[in-house]
Image (cartoon, helix red, strand yellow):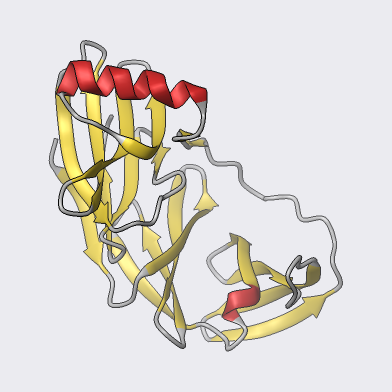
Length: 219
């Protein structure tokens, strides 16, 4: 199952969102360095990656909500321990600049995407023990910390953690007979990921080693 798309960014990937039209979806990707962030767009039809520009200085408060070819809308959060919404900001994309800032209001997404995310289970949850038993019997692996799990019509997807001279996060895709189709290490370190992969239009989307975006098609 070869990757049909992969791209490495210079800075770690912070967030991924969907935008555009359902029949022509695009990815909104924010990458962050130590003191700055960048906004990117990826056309899933042409596989082209566009650098939209350097994010504004208050990027840490901005959450992408939706966008079009010309502009993007963000929720700006307040700077506090329990932040509420400070405002709604609209940015033009070419050039990248703030167009308007409004008071908080409901935002209804213009386009609904049929993307799916896995169920997340922590090691402290009882159901996680069933996964531990299954992995030990089926793959002779001792998993811990947590797991992301998705059950499709003919595929099972797992993102889980093994200790091997340090914690490693693996992504495994199986058919319903538990034959492995894909097994890939996607991260290492003590941090536990949450919803470490996404499915959109039968495409598996995930981040590897914080810098590389990978997509496998037709799962």
